[in-house]
Amino acid sequence: MRRTGTMFVAFVTGEELRPGVWDPFLYRENGKSRTLGDNMAVSRLESETMTEAPFAPLEYKHIPKENSLTFMLESSEARVNRAMNAVGEQALLFGTMRAYLGNVVVMPKAKWLGLASPLIYPVKADFVHLVPKDGLHYFWWAYLRSPAFLHSLPVGSGGTRPRLHPEALIRTPVSVPPITVRRQVHLKLLSSAERAWKERTRIESLLRSVWD
Image 1: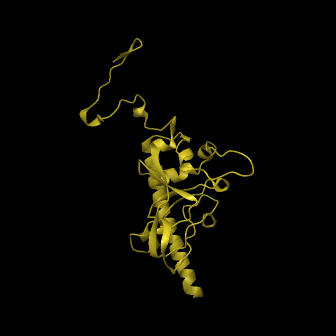
Image 2 (image 1 turned 60 degrees about the horizontal axis):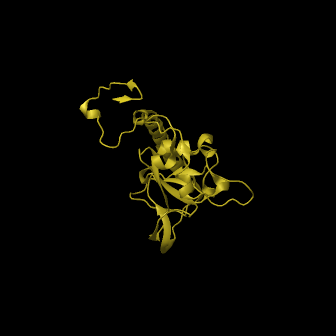
Image 3 (image 1 turned 30 degrees about the horizontal axis):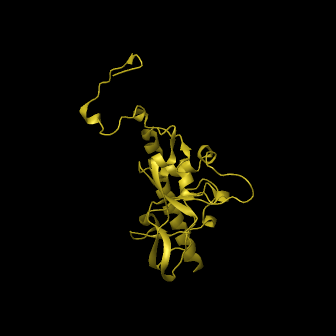
């Protein structure tokens, strides 16, 4: 291939070929100079009719400020029978209230809580649902909480700052490491999250047995 007087030769095996539009930067697979929308789908929460909810709707008050893989799941045995915003296990949620940017959670697997799948979690409307294209939701949990990403958000200024809309969120520039590194981070955090949720569930069960 010749371009502007420069020639290069590439040797590629058949299994490495990928159909699609040629991208001279695809080999990097690091997302640099790209946007969040290039890496994941961003959507508003969808509501569904729930007849019962094991937990109260997730709110910002349930999420700790420190880097914790777990958060409060407030018990609720109420029968609701009404439409509520809801997501499933391992859903990645991003808080849109500008005063609380950095509130990012991954909903735990049911088995980590000693419950049966599928498990549906009710959620307040102040979140958007993110679906990473690489499936590495725990890497993105860490990245979306990082100062590097939060400082890139179009947060505006002034005392009255509205919510961050999905349309603005997907245009936010991102710079992430290669997928091999992202996968390593995700797997380590996934393992840590499983241990943390199981331990939290064990402690809460122990405390209930003492005080009930």
